[in-house]
Length: 263
Image: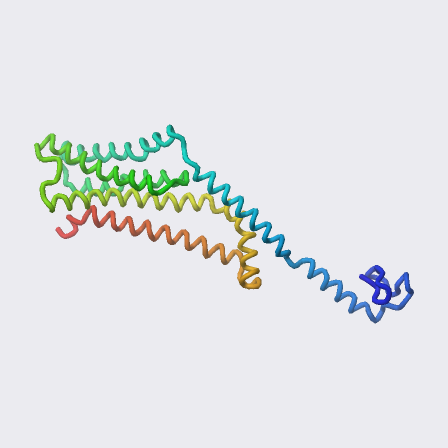
């Protein structure tokens, strides 16, 4: 504390200034209050420091995004294509051969397998690594079309029927079946993306929480907590991804079993 007469430093226990020897008894409550206010002012966050910290966090986030989004090598890309596109393609063709040719079972079993089998491949594809969506979307289209054409080719070898559809109805059936396979894979991709985001959430939260705190102080004057803001963002991300995934699942089921539902 400072003496109100000579402004020299005095201890909190002193009742007389050792420099000017004046009595401080009447000023003690006021001096204590001033010291408390000075301490509160020191504890107020420095907005310039917050801005610098926010800039640092944005730089760290940009580095992390670039790190996860950087292109993979040709060898790894070819391996991913083989594992996540060619393997499910082969499995779908094997399932078609076993169900329709070897065991001559009902076609609905093949449709159900075709809706279930691609999903885990899409899930693990996007669960382990952040990938560009458009190239893999084109890969999914290839998988769906190649699967249906391959099944038609296998059937033509046994029944000597044309490989390509011969009527509008057959073309619609082929497109709906292809869409069912594609939406199953897309559902897995969406669920895998949600799982990847959940795995990275703790690391991102450590970096983003100071940013949210600064935002809360700036917008709500401290009335909005950082945990509330972050929780809202997390729920929006999770529920949005899950809602889209459920939507693609519903479309996959509808397109795959459309011909059997009314029967």
